Length: 381
Image (cartoon, rainbow, N blue to C red; front, side, top):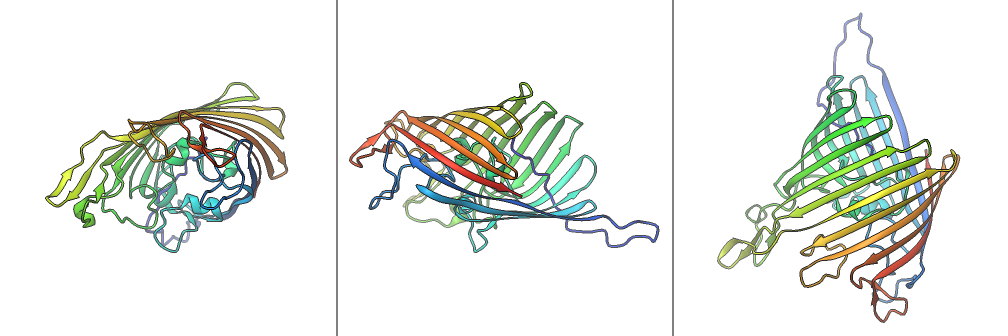
């Protein structure tokens, strides 16, 4: 399951102790990962051809043909007593995809936040942290499949703001947050804010998290000073459910479903700002994850996902019918083979769309399916 990072940071530190008090314990940890992979299409071409890139699923991180690199990830965590800070740095194409909305030179920063454990039940976090929505995460070391789902790829990656995590009891947790528009990690260019919330339930055998996000992601036209036909989208609402349970000592079942919708918003015209006519747009989907451990070193797993865009959606699939709809069903079968801290991930993936969205092998037309194989190596330290 996606790790829920306990986040929030305080701007003060205990600056004095009596002679009887012991100073808080200081801890510094470094962890991270490095990943590389090779990917080949089975029913389409495997090299960039003139202006065309080699076909790949319209998902994140594992789309390059042939032998390719993912990213190097270094996470530094410093903690002193009840306060701490996390700096998570990424280098390489996978990292660049994760921080695509970086507005300055710090596009190697995946996470950067401070936190304060205000009590045993309340943690405050301030800064930039990876999203709480969805089942999968950016780091491949925490995912069973190497390639990612459509829902994860077109949901948020990161948030910058302030949040409060609450341990309601031994099983229930909650989170509330005020954030910049999603994936704008360095500062807020839009002048609007997004609200987030989560309710979680976790026991040893499994967990379930219900997640919410609401807010204007690109700002108002008046605030942006846009001119001449520019369009500002309305507020985005997303509800997401991620859950997983151990069915037995060897079997694990995970499930994720999400619904994302954005209001049509406003347009700037010669006569002023007016509401845009039309239906709201977005996407929804569901994915099932089944994993079986043969022993402590070898496991097999499959992910089946259905993803649908309506009224143009997020522009993920690129080809739409007259109603602006398009959908895809993807099946990914992966193996996990551990050699110490190194994980080898062989993978077979089949994406089948309801329209012809992939270029065919002869590069003279399109087709509705894409089959590919992949071998990834992920080292975790």
